[in-house]
Image 1: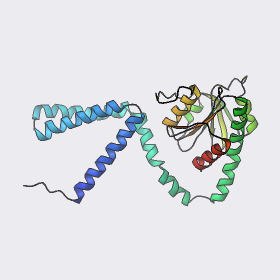
Image 2 (image 1 turned 90 degrees about the vertical axis):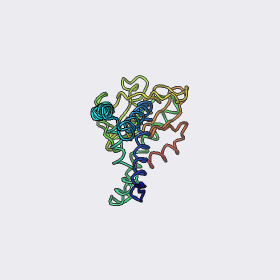
Image 3 (image 1 turned 45 degrees about the vertical axis):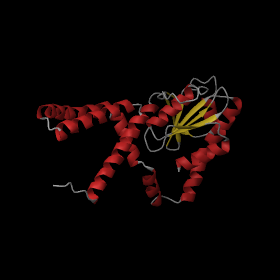
Image 4 (image 1 turned 90 degrees about the horizontal axis):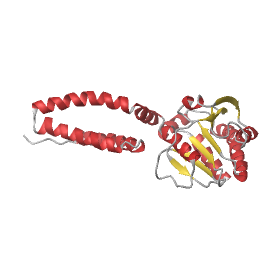
Amino acid sequence: MLFEFGLKDIIDIALVAVMLYYIYRLMKESRSLNVFIGIMFFVVLWLIVSQVLEMRLLGSIMDKLVSVGVIGLIVLFQEDIRKFLFNLGAHERMRIITRLFGKDKAHDKEALKQIIMPIVMACLNMSKRKVGALIVLERNMPLDDIVVTGERIDATISQQLIENIFFKNSPLHDGAMIISNKRIKAAGCILPVSHNLDIPKELGLRHRAALGISQESDCVAIVVSEETGGITVAIKSDLQIRLSAEKLESILTKEMM
């Protein structure tokens, strides 16, 4: 009997291909690509042994390994899976749909400007004086686990406060500032450091920390370089370097809306 290939089979194959593609991207971002390749090799071998060659003994052993292996992979990659599911729910299309039922855009943009401008002006002044700074703006994914690593402040966002915190003699100037819900939540926070080998050599630890937190959450991280005074933004595992104040304002307005 000939194998019947219809529309449902095409959809089935397309869905599997999309699923594998997103798993591939997830593994690549978490530096686990070799693990993904190894898993795919094992799955293909398992299908050949159990379905094509119909080896009952070896097939049953591999069936058990697959059953246990799925639980092991969930435990091993629980943080990556959590991030993937969160990003799926917080996808840009979801945000667009949510905005359709939100408040007036003009009012929201004006309120956002009151938050962004003190940050931009503080970064501009610190850039001129070559004062190092690392500011993280929380979006949809909570950063409570990062906040507890620093000193809680819970203050209104102001240019003077930001500059005072990152002043060279300040005890909190070495860590990161976390801004959440239109307030400065904490300062002196410790961020995960990215081990990406593609980061330019001239960029320092602050840039690696900004990239690291952008890889683990949907936040926007701003860096002011202590060596060059350059302003950098890290979003979704991507660095945008040597930004002007106008470009920084434009990026923050776009990303925080």
